[in-house]
Image (tube, helix red, strand yellow):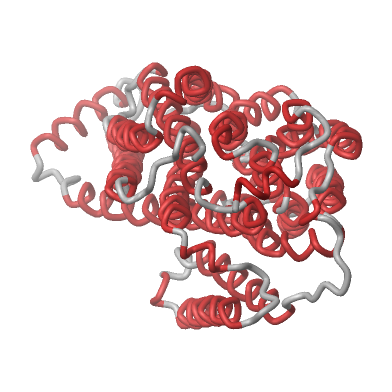
Length: 517
């Protein structure tokens, strides 16, 4: 079926040229998933909110894009895929300007939601258009190009965001999208064309019930993920109710999609084992990627004293490792079984997580750079092949829907992963603090010796009582730093274990026939 469809339609322009606006638009969308990470403390200060409240800037974007992704198929039929793609870029670009001029957290969240609505369709459409322009046996090459967007963009986001925030100000991390968006629209209008099955159709019906259930599910879930930790999770009645509604809406949504003829998404793609397993692996990987990109800047800025630019710079080796690996995969990847690449990549990803578990407050920048470099290699090594494997057994006409479903779940994975690690850091810090406080007593010889040594230093210019109070204050601050340090180490360990657990799933994926038979 796939070969028949491939011979029915071929692009008029060279696929590599057509990919220019497609990849630029996808790069711009994925970049905005992480570019705000290092700027969150500055945004929190501008809006006079806490750091945890400022994470709404990240998760609202992911959830909003998740809402529109399953609707991609409907809007492509209603407007034509090319027109919808261009409309999405325009909405994303306009919303980026509004994000830059936001002067309060509510306004920022609203504009980020609009930005997510505009950008949500960009990635699945970019993936499906890119896949369709090449035959099955050449999809590995196209996915190497697409992988540069999926892997590198969120990795260099903190670096670029840190540089812009330090040298200009945080609104410019959104203003830079405006010229890129205009350029993408111009090129897309000239180069992209719709295959017969992706053109505008008549009498298109919208799955209104499914759309409302999707909005209810994702909105309730976002509120629970973002505010649950502050409210003591299920110790709060309203969190229990919101969780109940989220689960109810989610179950109802999938029941409606399974039974309704003109459903919002076609969930029959999950019958394909490669797609199901490959999507599950990508969800976990995206959760680990976005979670690590969210908490590592917190560690560097909160505990190590780095500014936005330096924290982004310390993470730059991740992008270098990814680019090196993508180049190698593009050169020799066709000679290596994709399954082995994914397994090696996940193994390295887990190793890099355990390497971050060895961090302490006296480390040099190189101790941050090496695990990030390994993580960049790992992400590129497994992300590109797993995308190729997950879509290898699908037909051309299934690509748009499958890409939408896959990217919806990846977005959810990213949002859930970010919320989980934020909660882990908060809870583990409390646990470590409780343990350390129990040992901060004069009955503990080590503590007593440290206290008297610090007090003696202060007594050179202060009275003994004031010197004792200042010694206590200094030791308490050190205790908080160590408690938070322990929490970050536990969280990186959790990410490492999550990657290790999904490795056996890859053995269940079918390989690709290199000869295209």
